[in-house]
Image (cartoon, rainbow, N blue to C red):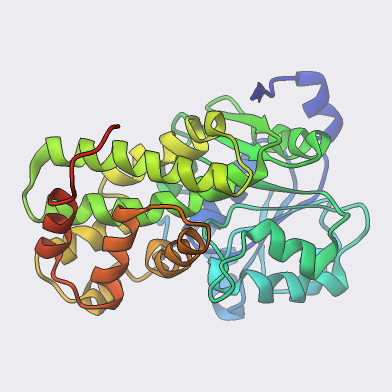
Length: 344
């Protein structure tokens, strides 16, 4: 992976208009980062009343209440204007509406716009990687980029040190999106391994639920470390089977994101696991979190894709059984512990 750190390149792109589609915590944080870097940035959300409130209060009170918007950040509910004016467009919506978002964008997308996303997960029902959905909806010959890595929205919005990977089959596109994100406390690295970056972003959420379950049961640090390590092995097996590279999954978008989401309670997926481990109903835990929990949606798709390719993912499978088959959390963990010894 290459580190993007060219002041000359950033100055060339400084006045590019950027639009972020999705005004949740993650979309808002990325819009703040772009605007902080000097780019005129529109943040689009579907609720006109909510976007008017963001415009008036100059912050996203629901998700990032204490983070003021930079002057260059403009909230808007005008979808056509936000898309058609964008030279870089970044999608930050849940994976469940990713295809619909692309379909809405397509009629207003200019040929010069660089389209990227920071959505993590697989498409529900089809199990497709999001770049495959992009190829179907937009254009298989058009370059795109995905932003992924160990990030919590609140820390990005506050300007705390952060590093991400920007992946694209076209390295020039990856570099331009990375340059727009890269700042004093935000490091953006580039990769051409789109498959592994997307697999890492999808799998880590499911594995974080497993780590949360273990901690909710009080199984301790040893068990959590084992789950992270063996979870990484599952992620790598699937990534390689789908055409990715193990090296990428050992980086920010794989191991880095996995460690983050498995160990810190800012992770919604980990918090779901904690609640399940403590015996709470899934619906109650999700309702309390109040935002999309991608691991819950990704678990069936990951298990289906793995099964179709003959890939063993016992941790992901047990998470699926807890979420969708009513398997008690303790039985799920015991099921992993009772597996026959094997070579690592």
